[in-house]
Image (cartoon, rainbow, N blue to C red; front, side, top):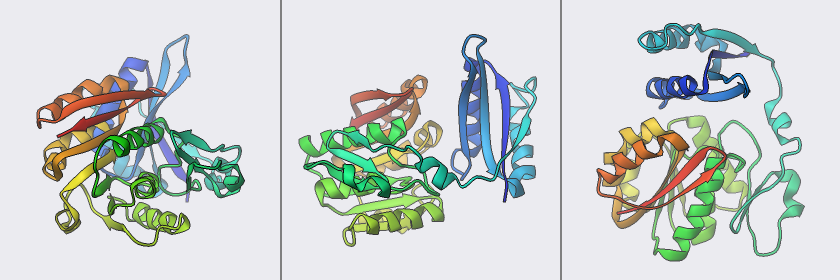
Length: 291
């Protein structure tokens, strides 16, 4: 089944604003959104949302309505993406990624793991998180810092995707980990990736939108919550996230564009969390906070 890209072409500043609006409307759903620089000198950017062809009509209508107030002057363009084996394609030249003691690698690079490294094997597939995105690498770096400086008895990985961060937390600390995602495919992929990495006990997987599952009350409150999703849903769920955080607990937030960090921080400062550190990776930030 073909994939469709709906997009608008505009300036960098407006593309960021359009992305914010897309995040408001589609941020908690299983659609990839993002911005791409087309021409640096002429300041031409595209803000895009990706979907399967069967969803095009409904998504297109919602996108048109979402942009009607402030961005009606930007025509929505359409591109049918070629049918490509994206898994095989993405593995071509996909080198291992190192973040602190962690190395995230595909099955084709098992021989490149060095002595003393914490290896996590993730092949590119149907769920986000091969370690190559700046948000994942940033989370891994902060995770290692938290493990060195805090006592962590249990972990929540909210929006687990491929499960890379949940697996990293378990391998580093060997404590119970709850991994959740709104997408049942991602949950299934994460569970399979855990098995590939030799994790057969100590991890629980659940498909849950936001915090709407008994899994949170059963396994929480949590000493560490990792949420690598998007800025809008992070801000929206701040009260619930903090309510599930144990006293003295730590939070690692990512999926946040650099210019969005102050808004996200304001929401979590409003929930009485203390900012510890922010790190930058390829235009994205990872924020560490404590209760």
